[in-house]
Image (cartoon, rainbow, N blue to C red; front, side, top):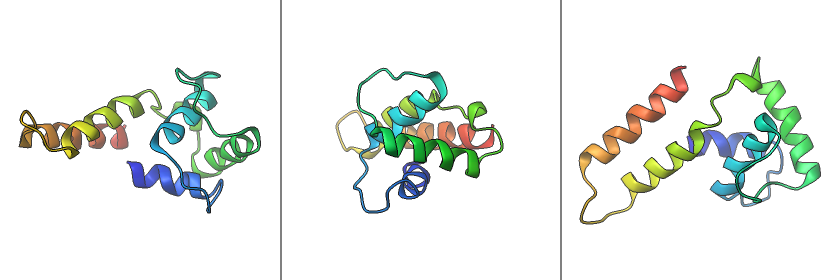
Length: 103
């Protein structure tokens, strides 16, 4: 999922090192008009993002952007080693990601 976001945002600015929070919050602002955290791309990048979303997707407003936070949190839990991290964490992430891509 992060790689897909990076592809999208590289069309906005290919030389910028995009952070996951900005790549999550900017589409939220696009779809909902606001985001939960102030991290977002600047105004010119946001305008380019709007154009990129419309060129990549038939109906970008139907994207399940609200699932990005859950995917990010599940990804972080599955990727980072720890005493409570198990194979099921990774499987849960894969299932959630697959669900968001297929719907």
